[in-house]
Image (cartoon, rainbow, N blue to C red; front, side, top):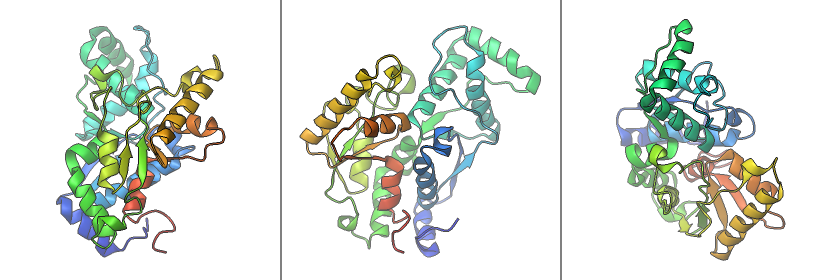
Length: 295
């Protein structure tokens, strides 16, 4: 794959991290069609930042929502297969989509904590020679940036891509609102990504690429997307409230990791012209990797 940055630039930034790390990667269905930007730019940025996303072969849809019924085991098997594949490879499992992250972590928690679900699931999978007991660690791409790469190294890479000056970042000084939604943070006792009431991971990401985070009260509230088929006025009203609140606090754009949230916010934003962009797309642009840059 050919990137707009030079080979020397890529090697230089990779050396900042030392040995390249490899993660098993679960993209999920939406990133293969409606949210290709989230996937494409994450892959490009990972190579520059010094880690590899090794896509799991023949993965299946996680279902998009976590099944709450205790005896609903069959619908969790696709997630368990992905988790078992990562365990076999000896890797942590990375995902980008908030919904996939939510489902994978909750299903893994079920396998670890619930003997009934673990027993039933392994009975199903035994015919395929698969055995899994919750060995895999699931991490969101943002957690890799925060906990493994480190925000300082992300900023260092952004500087290197912009003549050594963070002020030349395309997002320097830009007021950016983080939109978490609910799936990235809750249930917090299982996901453990960040404080569900006062999260910071996206704000720290915004700072790392040179932007100015905008703190607004609706940033971690649900957009109502799952209520669409019950009452479409709910997501319409929720998204308008979120966007209005963000703009009142000065946000010039919103950044998210959830394809469903992004779709819902764009569809229901009315007369607002606020851009809603995937975090990976912002990262790639800050690193000079976005198509059309440096052409």
